Image (cartoon, rainbow, N blue to C red):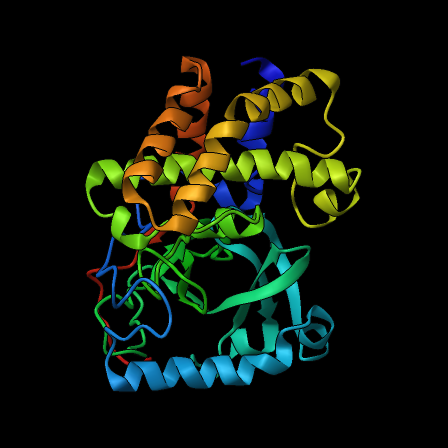
Amino acid sequence: MNAALLGFVLSVVPVTVVAQDGQAGHHDHAGAPVDCRTLAAPPWSGLSATDRATIDRLQRAARALEQTDAATRAGFIPQFGDIPTMGVHWVNRDRMQDAVQADAPDHLLFARIAGRDSLVGVAYAFRGPVDAKLPTLYDSPLAAWHDHAALGGGGGNTLHMLHVWFVPSPYGPFAGNNFLLAFMAAGRALPNACWIQSEAEVTRFELLATLVDVLHRRSDSTRAQGGRAVARGRVGAAGAGTALATALDAVATRLRPHFAALDSAARAVDRVAWDRAADQSLVELRPAERRLVETMRDRVKGIQSSSAGQPRRNR
């Protein structure tokens, strides 16, 4: 893999968001597998009735904002670019100034799916000290806040955040990262969350999702001739040189039959076939390519740190 491809892989995540990567005290808060039958997809039956009712109210209220022009009229504006595993955060600055309220999320989460911007979740957010008292909005212990130190606005503050997903999420409805967004954006069949449970399965899934994301961004930006890719924060692929295009296209060509097998297995709910195709997809990567996919995955997971262990009291 050449320097051009390295540049693309390391540039997909907007620089302003990953500036905190590597800071002392920060650790992985991508999430961990949850009960794959009750907590990995709506209607989140493993949550308490109260939590499910809150999410249901959020989703019903958000239907009026499913179009980005409606979100704009409601005071939300896109920020941070199109971040892998999160999409684009549309921020309501007025709400950010108010106390956090369970029925009034501060951010909308949009992802490009099937050629359109789709509302895939919401987020609560506020700036404050690292040891700020965190609102308790849900009963579930999964509803753990994370923070983005680089977005804290200075003065020792950080940006505290809690996601709520409206779409399947193998790490639960409140996960900081949703690696399934890559499969959704690329139009690929979603793997069963019960196939993503052990540490080895999680690692394989995250690497696959990262690979799907990188290759989809290349093909997506090519179809858009660079325009939308840049406008939506998809830097790197847009305007890339011949060397980059050749490197990415070569990887895509080698993986095409394996990705097709992944889709077929997921649709047939064939665990054995999916495992085989997933393993073959990663084996197909050359050592340098795999290292760069791992780097990309690690950068995405390093975007946020955990606020877990801090007081969870009403703000």
